[in-house]
Structures are given as structure tokens and as C-alpha cells.
Image 1 (spheres, rainbow, N blue to C red):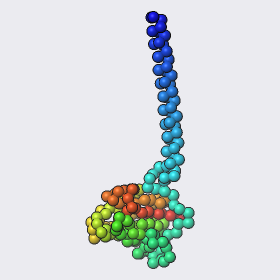
Image 2: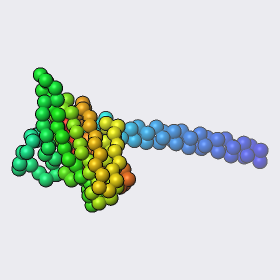
Image 3: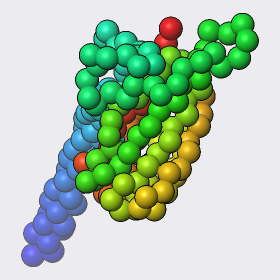
Length: 181
């Protein structure tokens, strides 16, 4: 009887050890797979794992002031002028409105180095406009205009959105596309 109990304890100890080893192997394997999966997902989702930064689409063209024939979703600059004497960079001014839980127009395209000026207008209710990759946010009450201004230093296609409308899950979002000249 004593021998039988010792054998049972030994068997339980061995089985327990095997189960622990199996769990460790599964944990290591699943962590490795998760890391590989996250890397692939990060590349698909955006630049350096960001959910709001992407590569510039091939063939992206920066529109000039008053340019016609561009998609209604692309903002045409209200004003384009030299940012400073003897530099290639431009000062580009845009009007973006928020209405019916959408930004209109929703895409802004500029060259790297340009100074971007946005007059942000909340038409039918209060909205915010959040540029997470540039650390900017402005809140405009219904009928109010707010100004955002920054130098486009990072090449890429960056999402901006209305945090109070649902953030990245809302329909109130758009893109600032910065093309490297």
C-alpha cells in the first residue's frame, strides 16, 4: 500500500512536470507567434506600428492654389506663398469644416517642410480636430473657427479625427498627407 501511494505520488509529480513543461512551451510559442503577428499587423496598419501613420500613396500630387479637377475630398489651398525668402517650402492655408460628423474636405496634401495653416470651422455642433502624430488638438463650438498651424516635418499619410465624435471609429476623420519633395 505504501509503495502504491509512493508510485501514485511519483506519477502525479511526473505528469505535473510534463504539464508545466507543455504550458511553458505553449506560452513561448504563442508569445513568439504574437510578436510576429504584431509585426506583420503593424506594417499593414501603419508606420512603426502606429494606427494613425501610413506611407504616402504612390503618385500623390500636392495641389496648387485654385487648382481644379481634384477630388472633392482633397482640400485645395486657399493661399500658397513662399514660407520665407530663398526657400522652397511654402505656406499653405486651408479651410476645413466639420459638419454632419464629417470633415469637408477630408484630405490635406502638402510637401515636407511646408507650413500648414488650417482654419477649422464647426458648422452644426461642437467638434474637435485631433492630429495625434503632431500632438495637436483644437475644439470649436458650433459656428466657431479655430486655427491650427504647424510645419509639416514628417513624411507620411497621417490620420486626424474628432475625438469627441468617437475617435478612430468615427466618420469624422481625414488625412494630412505629407509628400517628401
